[in-house]
Amino acid sequence: MQSGLPLVPREAAVYREFERLYHLARTLRPTATDRWTGDLVAGGTESWGSVDRKSGAITLSAQHVLRHLRGSDSRGGADQQAQALATILHEATHAGMALEAPTAANAVHRNLMWNVMEGVAEVRAMADIPAFAVLAGYGELPVPPPQYPAPYSAIDGLLKQASGPRRGRGSLLDALSRGPGALHLDELADGVLQNRLADVVPVGDQQAVRAALIEPMLHPAWGHIGKMASGIGESVARDIQIKLNSTVDEIRQHYRAQPGQPFPAEGPNAEAAGIADGNRLAVLPAPNASDRVDRSAPAAGGRPDGSSPEIGDQVDGAGRGGRTPAEGRGSEMRFLDGVAPAAGATARRPSLGQGTRGAAQRAKGRRPESGVERE
Amino acid sequence: MPLDIAKFNSVYTDARGRVRREGADVAAEQARLLELIPDDAADDDLRWAKTLIASLAEPPAPPREYSELYHEAGRIQAAAYQVQGTVEEQIEALATARRKIWEIADRADRDEAPDIRAMTRSMEHVEDGLRNPLWPADDQPGQNS
Image 1 (cartoon, rainbow over the protein chains, first blue to last red):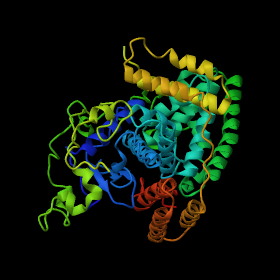
Image 2: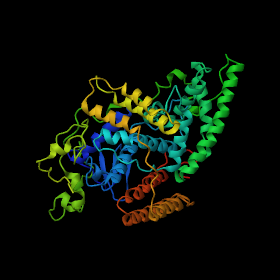
Image 3: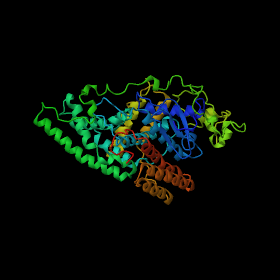
Image 4: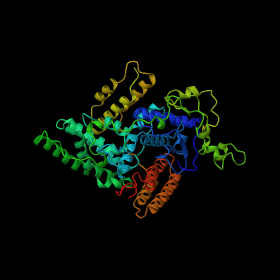
């Protein structure tokens, strides 16, 4: 977790609302892995969001994400809400998968995979924003421009190449969202295999054939396209398509000429060479109970260890001058302290503000929760 | 039986892709999705599913036209990304560019400011990648190139 940034108390309404949205994001694309440990950090004004690889905490900008989590907003602000929900979907996708797959033969453990993972998370975020916003009671929000332009365009192009009648874009996005990140290219290779080569490749040869299909996907530009425009990503996808088509033809010709001979290819993860194809799914990390949030009983009483800085621990908070933590931060951030109304993490309606599914009617005549920003 | 949200979302993703990218028949795609809704679906689920089904018939929003401020922010982002040098120099260039983009967003119209600010979302992750590469032993370039 980034030092000096405050944890959002788990009893705060905005914490409950984020937890609800996080759960709904995982409902849209279920995954057994959950790297979020339940700590939500209120990020600064010049940030958006991140998942801490070591602590498992999620940091979201208080100003640009958290404060907009209040359901359908009749006062405008749809663009801000769309960006806030896109950030949550992107970070929830990262948190929903392991990064490495140490024993999988087709895992790629190279830094270029970072851009592949960013592309996958952003494609998933953009794909699911309309369904997510309506599901969560935020109404029909505009789909914002994708960020990570080149990785986004490259993954979008690869999805187009890997999709087909046997494995569609939806199925591939489901699997990519489950991760691990190191197996993203293996999953896309499986799409190509299932849609274009399933009639010739024996089941026992599939891991090796996927390895052969991964090779043309390892475009050298992956290492630096995180910093480039969308046109570069489209070029990368086109380059890969030419090589991929050639590899598909080569594989097809091989099995036509030598139907009993396995296609010669080695997986990119030399350390795991020899893993049988049937073990591919078995090597995916099992859900780790200690890493998961107990959705059936969301924590209501703050952190168990009490060691990390809470909002009120800030030097400009209650520690000086006897002000409340909210006053110490100014009215802008008061919503962070608001106590949540009774609502489970699985609720379909926003716990803050007005949802499109009747929250406005329910809120009529009710006094706003203490400290919840209602501007 | 409750609506299978994940399955519906996955099939909806396919349907939207076929409609938008391949010009598939909207009514046929809508009919396929309707078949996934159980007779006793909860009201909330029913409304959600029908909203998505109806959205297939809507034309995609036209590309948004942005002001010069948006494009100025884009140029600042691109220039920062092109900076070569040490990791520290690249981080500094990105941090400086992010601050400039935030300032530009503060001057932009209310409708446009969020999209300008959002340019810094990826820059933030690139900075993180420079500071903490996923596989430090890997000599291939990644975020830290």
